[in-house]
Length: 500
Image 1: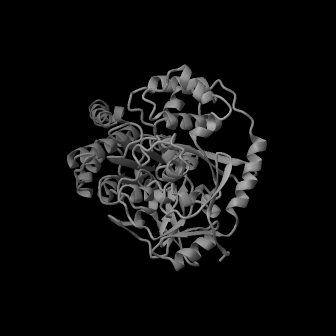
Image 2: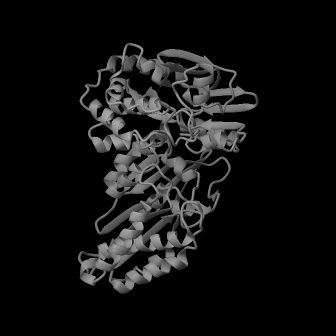
Image 3: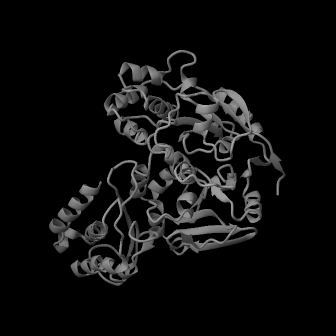
C-alpha cells in the first residue's frame, strides 16, 4: 500500500490555503464555515441537503490541468473530505464589486427574507460557470434543490435567465494554477486524519482502498455523504472509522465497450446522467428528478446501490436493464447480477471488507423496449413512492411479435428493489394482447405486498404499479389495436397525475 500521510486537513478556502486540525472527523463543512471561519452567509436550514441554503462551490483538479466545479450542500459534506479541494462561499463573490449573479438578483428583486438568498446565488453562480443555464427550464432544474420559504421563485428564475446573456469569464489560466496547487495539496499518499478517537482515510487508488478496507472491515465507506451525512446530522451516530472513496480515481471512470457501459462506483449521478439518457430518455428524465442538483453533484452511482435502500431510484432501472455489479475484497474480485445483490431490507450480498467497484450496464439491443417512471408527491427533489422500470425483448416487429424476455423491476414495493417474477412469467412466450396484459397486471398482487407509510398507502402503491405496467404494455402492444387505449390511458393518467 502507498504510504499513509497523517496530517492536517488541507484545502483552499476563498483563495486562501487552510490547514485544519483539532476538529472531529465528522465535523461538517457548514459547521466549520460558520463557527470557525465566521462565514455566516452560508446558512443552515435543513441539515440534510434538501433546502440548498448551505450551497457552496466545490472545485477539484480534473486531472488534465483544469478544474471540475460543482455546487454541493455544505451541511452534509464532512470537512476531511475537503482535503485537496477548493471551496468558494458567497462572501467570495462580491470581493471586487457586485458579481453578475448578485447584480441580477438585485435587479430582479430576487431576494425576499434573504435567508435562502446566498444558496440561490451560489447555485446560480455554479450553473453560470458550468454552462448549465440556457432557458427557463434549465434554471428551474438548476434550483430545484433550493427552497424559498417566501415563494420568490419567479424573480429568482428571471435573475437566472438574465445570466444566460452574461459572458462567462475565461478562467483557464487561473484554473490551471489552482489545479496544480490542489494536486500538491492532495498528494499521492493515503490521506489520514485522526481526532478524539475518530479516524478518516482517503486513498487515491483502488488498491490502497482494498488494503485499507481489509484492515478496517467495519469502517464506513463514504463518497458523496448524501446518506452518511444524515447519519451524523439527524441520527447523531458515532462513526469511529471512515474511508473516503471520493478521491479514488479508479472509481470515477466511465468506460464503454461491447455495448456495455462501465460506471465506476464513485461516479456521481450528474456525471452519469447524459450517458444513461443516451441509453434511454426515461433514464435521463428520472435522473433529472433525482433529488436536487447539489445532491446529484455529490451522490454516487455505487452509493445509491450499496446502501440498499428499498426506494432508491437507480437500482430498479439498472435491474431492468440487466446490470451486473463488480465487487472486490482484498485481491479477490467477483461479479453478481444486480438483482441478486439485494437480499432483504438492510442486508446485501456483500462480505465484510468487500466493496463495490463498478456497475456494468448493457445498452438496449434491437427488439428491446424500455420504460422507467418515478412516482412521487412532488415532481422535483422528492423521494419515490414507487419506482418502476421495465425491459421487454420482443421477437420481430408489429403486434404479432411474441415476448421472449421480460424484466419488470420496482422500488418502493418491497423491502428491497425487486423484479416481479410472476408478472414476468405471464408475458414470456405470449403476444401483448388484452389477456396477457391483464394477467401480468393481476400477477403484481402476488409478486408484492407493499407497506403503508408516509409516502403512500399499500393500496395506492399496488394500484399505481399495476397502472404503470398496464400503460407500458398497452403502448408496446399497440393499445389502439387491441381496444385498451381509452380505458387504460384514463386510469393511468389519473394515477400518475395525482402522484406526480
